[in-house]
Image (cartoon, rainbow, N blue to C red; front, side):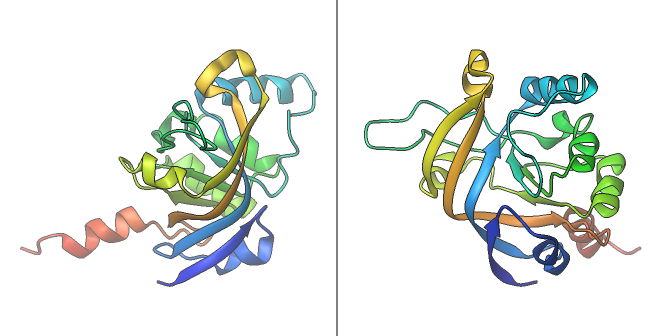
Length: 185
């Protein structure tokens, strides 16, 4: 396990180097999207329409922010449960998505898609939304404004803290953690 500074958008070489358990600090551009935004993106793909942003090599953070206080780019910005996006994630990875940030386990279908499409899943610390927001330097709504907090936002981040949970090799930090502490009888 290593501590790694990475840039987003992600490139394939970076994704190949990441292993479950690595601590990362992400700098660059990431996007936010939750359930309803994901549903709309899949509907757009089904209709042969373009997505509201070029998803190639991008990272989506599963988050709905609170309003920004004066002088801040964004309010509290903690992760939401990733499993709610599992229905949509494989299709977005097939379209070029390389990174996802949230909290909680992913389904086997999503883990299989990560291996197939060379994508990675990061966890952000739940309950640390105010702290995480300090790494977000700029936030702007770019699509689905009618969704309010669930609109798609483009974030510029500097040293956004996360942990690699699932890598392209089948590594799963949550499973590794459980195995480490299982009682042998």
